[in-house]
Amino acid sequence: MDKLITIYHGSEKIIEQPLYGEGKKNNDFGLGFYCTASEELAKEWAVSSLHDGFANRYVLDTEYLKVLNLNSPDYTILNWIAVLVEHRLFSIKTPVARRAKQYLIDNFSVNVNAFDLITGYRADDSYFDYADAFINNGITVEQLAKAMRLGKLGEQIVIKSKFAFSKLKYEGFDVAEKNKYYVLRKSRDDEANMLYLDLLEEESDGLYIQDIMRGGIKNDDPRIPRNIS
Image (cartoon, rainbow, N blue to C red):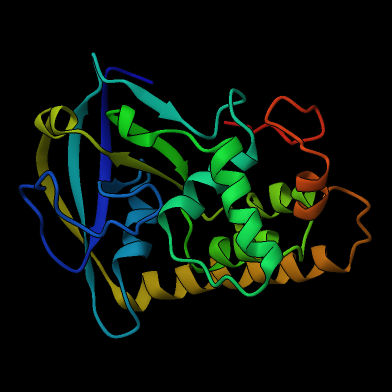
């Protein structure tokens, strides 16, 4: 990662001064300021079907920041999903899902609060559905890893610590027009969902979460797919 990076926050508001400690605790990686390196993605995330949005632009000095890149080969897909289930609210439909949530947290979770900055997948509606299907024993870990790359739904950069907030400088904003960017967002999501349905039709003899729990499988098992940055 370069020392100085430009990042964007998609929002219905102009945010000149992001505030440490604000936001929703049930976001993907807990409290933090959620951004992306892609202005186009920020614009897609900023709009609704009814309203334009704003891509707020910032420069972040990453020198001396402790960075966690959950999409690097140092981590597996289960590290990401363990962090997700620890923070997001999932529909626990079965006893298997209840045990799966705790098993993932106990064996694969990463303490995101120990870092200043986090990079990882963004669990929008599609990604969240894939993760939900996995912990409810509906898809294998191999299918989950493949699904994460469908539709190129994007990575997010999350500013976590007070120190990281102090290194953030507001640079301005661009308007995200709903007539353009809502269509792009929906198209991207529809494509991912279509590819996901095709994926479900493929036969899979891989590892389901129940297999992982029964086998006592840990993070160093070569059958668990490593991430690709």
